[in-house]
Image 1 (cartoon, rainbow, N blue to C red):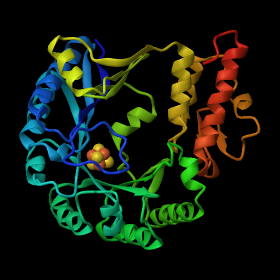
Image 2 (image 1 turned 135 degrees about the vertical axis):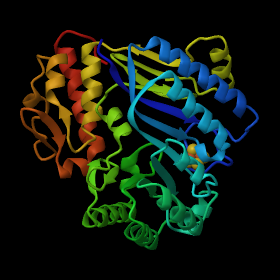
Image 3 (image 1 turned 90 degrees about the horizontal axis):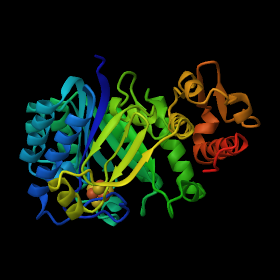
Image 4 (image 1 turned 90 degrees about the vertical axis):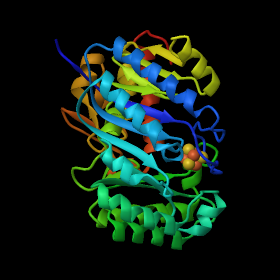
Length: 373
Ligand code: SF4
């Protein structure tokens, strides 16, 4: 029987304090940590029974701040995954705060990729947004991370309060000096709209300067916000962008299995209660039809430099004419028989280009006599 490949995401929804800009699901009350991890084990077991021949090829432990809970919780969960699923040489990433105190222990476990959230190499910015670490904490931690891990990522955010040109120069210097294999650069969204942030000319210029420096240092922009040295793309995140199979476990985690998409509840207590009752804690559950599946595949696939796999789209939506779909957008997209992707110009204006393509897809659906979505 054929085994199916899955990515596995495990959400750790706890942070010792909240950053001002955060819109992730995380709790500062740690009183339910033990019960939470027991509940996560139940959810893992449920999925291990429900999935057909699952083979896990990537694991991502994110948050929240996984390094804010005791190492034993993470270790137990990873052992549980090993017990329940067939693992196929998985990439195993754990997100850590620069104040993480158990890097050596992570190295002794099967974790093989570390992602450090620095966000800005500027103490004024870090203080302003209430991060709990300084730039020097990052530098000390990085020395230890590098001793044990080859595959590393540093997260940055551009557009944070108190940021200046110097912040970006410092960010560039950090990358030049410490040479992570992977760098993620997000733009802080103003009122949930990246365009509003990028309308700020100074932020836009700083963002472009950072991106240009990364490219000059040999980093390849393989996704709108993600850069890596060749061969160090994040395998787990690629599953999201290629709309492949992944299971999300824990509060607010989402999954995509075949044509099914779900998102778990954000409510910690409800999550624990549902798991104790042996029920999936869905907040959202949707069985996609081929159109919806194709739309999601295009929407996500346009984020990566490799582009959307048009063979996959043809199987889902044989009547779709790609040339018509992108008519008039030729400056912003490139396509051949196999892939549709954003051009460099399109990547820099990805928000509206992808939005426009999705709008046209919806019209196409309308023209075929289906519902407008
Ligand atoms: S550490 Fe991350 S998840 Fe926690 S509050 Fe800050 S931004 Fe949010």
